[in-house]
Image (cartoon, rainbow, N blue to C red; front, side, top):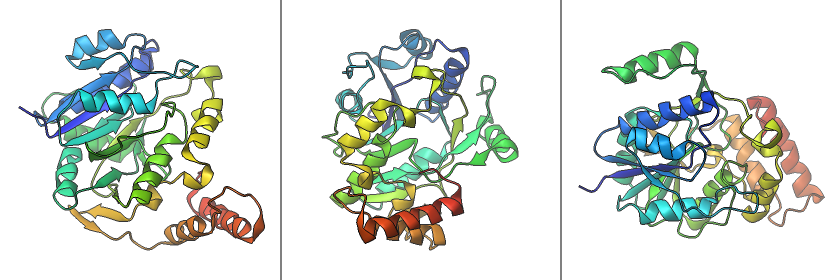
Length: 302
């Protein structure tokens, strides 16, 4: 039977015990979403093959990599599409826990629009042990999130839901580095696809972790590969975020975004940012002021 939705991901190495544990938690939550969901993993990182066998998940190992050995987003998406015949695809970072509302929201959006991208804010939660997936696990996880979680700022995205016929040509971005997720939103807007902020209806849970798995233990936005990603995206003007969605999913229906000072500042920032990346002139100066005002309101670095 053809699955309605294929979830695919390129996990980090499982060599770090905490990273391995939260990735197993995440993948297991995807597998518990029902028969309409298929899970595919991509890569050949340490411990990944063993984890795939353990959880009964298909693994695609022949992913292309850059000169630093990092898997390429273009290859990850291509392999997942070739291995699946689902009408909808969803890329997720491998530390993201899902609840059943994820699949419900995907169905609701796909019933209202043909070409779309669904993104949204995540919730952050410190998870220090394997999740109990016995009966009633969604309610228990939701209660834990309400008690100890926090909603992350609307910068970047940890998931992308889209029809399989979209995103055929993706630049050779390095996965797990900054910029490529922002480009996904920009590209959808430029192509006229509806970008949907699923935050009100979709609860995704990011299991907190440090950056020991990255070179020098640095956050991904500090790495040279992130600067390369930005160049491939066409510059900082093409790095969009959840705030740049043109619809919002609320109560299962698509609505225009709610007006707010942050939303209005972001609109002005986008309109005034020079498309050629120039960092001078009155447009650039005014856009920078709007960005600073937005950051003060949200506490965001993006």
